[in-house]
Length: 281
Ligand code: A3P
Image (cartoon, rainbow, N blue to C red; front, side, top):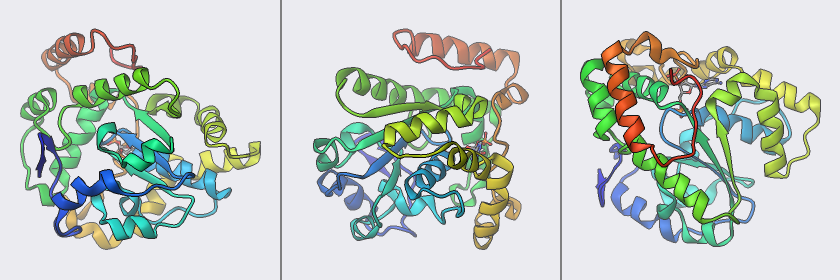
């Protein structure tokens, strides 16, 4: 689906009139306590969605059912309106596409960053394994698509630079940046900071419980059990959202030449960016 040059996967089985719905997002009403997670796909949205939901619920006892049911571009407006507050929404769309009311109310945004080399590998696996895409290409071809933005949700560079500009241009807007790599390095510290940003009183015990409940292997096991009915949608019936959950898996995929190419494109596209990513070399 092409919305003024912005490519989205076609979700017409889930959301009829998807184009109309996505175009109407600008007019949706927000609630003051809405929180929105924004990220380029494969940056750890499922993970942070779970963490943020647990913080707002004040409990790590329950893994939430379905992130997709709170994803702006994947749900029709009535479903959006029915989500119970406090709402933890999520999206891969650009800031300029968000509900005007949401921006006017200065609802909190958590922006998630991840090393783009790992994002590329994760996204390749996603495209390859989700049968709906009917994609059976090879990694050596995919990397070119990724670098030129010929994938759904478009270019990682465009998306990331746009958010950086939004953050710079709106210093008063409450946007909290969190990185996948920092979460992996010291989840407790990051969750504590996130709690502060969200205005949630969370004691050490709760933070520790949330970090434990959202540990990759635990989350994978629990979520895959909940998602088992959707196994037919995946290649070889293997659920693939919780794949490897590591920093630096790109090193198992990139050849030396691919890495050089990536670094060259990265250096050119990100030359004015202040974002820094761990494990790029
Ligand atoms: P990999 O494919 O590298 O394993 P998103 O949720 O934005 O689609 O991102 C998916 C990526 O986040 C996948 O990366 C997935 O394994 C990883 N992920 C999901 N839950 C995680 C968790 N609890 N801890 C660490 N990584 C997680």
